Each structure stands twice: as structure tokens, then as C-alpha cells.
Amino acid sequence: MTWEWSHTAEAYRDAEINLRNMPIDELRVIWAEWKATFGCDISFDPQFCPDTYPEALTESQDMTAEQLANDIWERASELRSCTNGGNEAYMCPYGCGPHMVAFDTVHDHGNDYC
Image 1 (cartoon, rainbow, N blue to C red):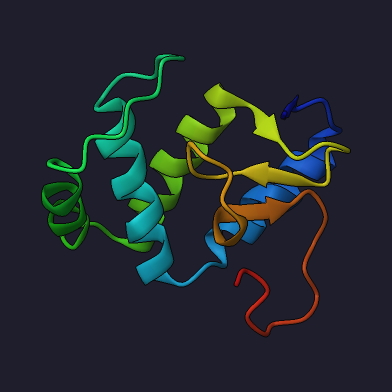
Image 2 (cartoon, rainbow, N blue to C red; image 1 turned 60 degrees about the vertical axis):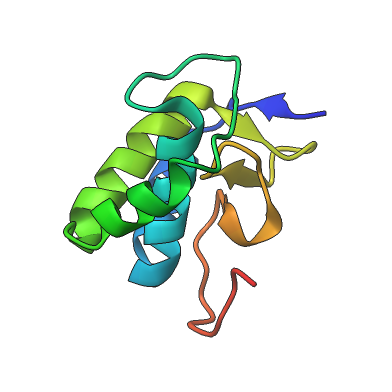
């Protein structure tokens, strides 16, 4: 069960900062998951297509971290899913642990996402 985002503007800013601080290889994986699940349009009937994932991952190699994060943030903002309690926002369609970010700033610059 997930919750819908219902946070302050500062919380959204912090979540976006945390997304943008993720390693580019992780951003590529998240972007490819979105692409393989929803294609170009957001719908609320997610169907992961394993045949399109490798192509999407290859396509992501031509994108900058900023481009990837912009698109991921837009898609995540439309889906608006987070953990029960509202502590972490889903950055991928599935809310898997490594692809969630906190709604507050992450001060430790270690690997907070795995």
C-alpha cells in the first residue's frame, strides 16, 4: 500500500535535490524502468515490458544527469506515490528501495540509496 504525496514545498524541494544527487548510473536505471513501464505517457496501469528495457537503458546513455533527473522528477511527480508514513518518495514506478528518496535532505554523502 502506498500513500499519495502530501508534503510541504520544502519537502518536495529536498526530495528533488536527493534525486539529483543520485549517481548517474542509478538515474539511467530508473529512467529506463519508467520508459519500459509507461513508454512516453503516464498511465496508472503499469505494465513492465522487459523487451523494451534494454533499449531504454541504451537510450539513457545519451542523456545527461540533468536530463534524466528532470524526466524522472516529472514522472514521479505525476505518479505521486510514497511509502506509508510519507517518508520516502518513489522515483521509479515500483517504489523499490534503491529508487526512493527522502522528503528531507540527506546530509551523509555516503551511499544512502542502497
